[in-house]
Image (cartoon, rainbow, N blue to C red; front, top):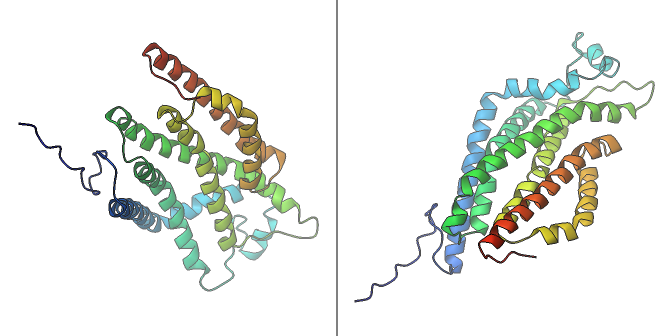
Length: 276
């Protein structure tokens, strides 16, 4: 007597890959499940960030404190000699500063979880051999995002010197805390997301979507696009800061090319067809 195949698992099962085509309602249920988990991760990170907001603000303020004394002279004139002071211009700015400080922590904490949820939604039919990449994907997404944000934290003081120097002589820069945190949040998140690109490319290689031949074919396009994206993402757009972001991304791209070639050699030994 022949056993009847069991139906695919429900959309809420997080560990089991799909056993066949999903209906529209199953896709919508899966999307709701992934969005809910992403928002939960963001909410947890926000609560943690709000509790630690004073420490976060001090850390975020440090790149401004690292500027030369001549750049920060205006802050001392309006804040009882504290040359690292940031001013508040509106009544609600204090609350907004705390919210944005918490948002920075929320992004750092939730970014890998959100990336994982997106990845699991767009690849519902994972085979068991591909499923083992889930944990490395989660860990590396966090490491790369933190690496990008940390790299931005190192670059920002150099960018601030260039940006504030455009004011010229006779104008003393005094930064408002609200705008400064906007600038920091945008830069940290932009650099963190940019450093996720190699991971996305590596996952496409491991899943057989792209191969070393295609990566080599479009190498010039990738390099040009990297410099254009770096010019848009970096806070100053000057050649030093742009190159500081573009060169690591290009190095990551070359590592992906070498990894693709190595994987293709292994697949050829096992008689598996590789993508172009």
